[in-house]
Figure 1 (cartoon, protein in one colour):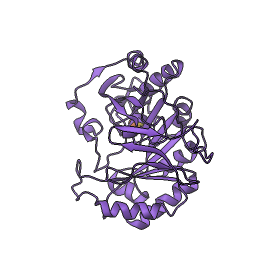
Figure 2: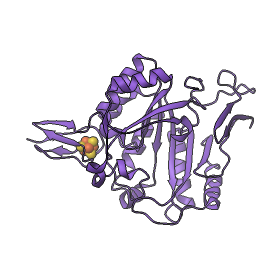
Figure 3: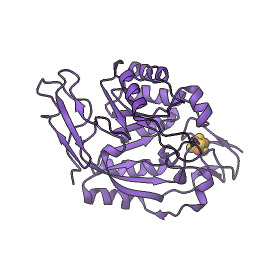
Figure 4: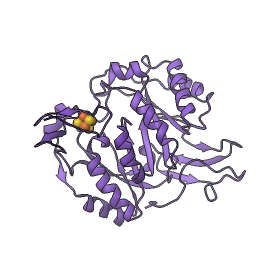
Length: 319
Ligand code: SF4
């Protein structure tokens, strides 16, 4: 008999022994299990700005974890060796229980991030960790492609404080490059934007594949959804895609086009562009980002003009 997985929008229906598109969820005796539960393939202490998150506890550190697996197969994947199924058996891992992982974050007084590969496909581990993090008052971050199922988003929402979500392109782009769909990502962002969590969106700009009119279209969708922070990041060749890197000048044009829209905070990633945060009301400098340091000029999250900056400006995790 077939059993349906509800971890992501694909909702794979799997017979005994069959694997889902993600390759790590498998039907064992009528129950779908995450075969690599707790088998950590990446663990690191990162500056939170690397997620990228610019409006959640700026200048702090976050303990990042990944298990193997992804439900998309983007030809330009930057983390293919821990996400794409052909690398599954080659990747060394070590078992780290949720208790041990959270204890490491408690000892360092930092937030935790579920990141690098696609945490939605190992969300049972993510949720076990995130529940424990909540008990310890540890902030939680999800870095994801955003292809939730409705059921998974409902499950995850109460336990995550900040989201960094990729919107990679329009529907045709997802079909051509990712074997995926933009629809569940946009539906997920619509829900997330209405919550109290901090939500930031990233688009990896591939010059020649993304045009300025694509940037305007995607930005209009995000603006209509109420998204407040958008990172436009420069592409570098990776995995199967070998196009030239996106030029700084194209990124600059894209940023100029995006800034005409109603998204208050737009940043250029993987680039020499200004990384600082300014008040959307009066233009004052609110957060200055140096390569290895962040300075915050806010009082209780507010500018001197009294504007409350979007996000969570607490300073926990400044180790
Ligand atoms: S996580 Fe997604 S891709 Fe993997 S089995 Fe479940 S529904 Fe399918």
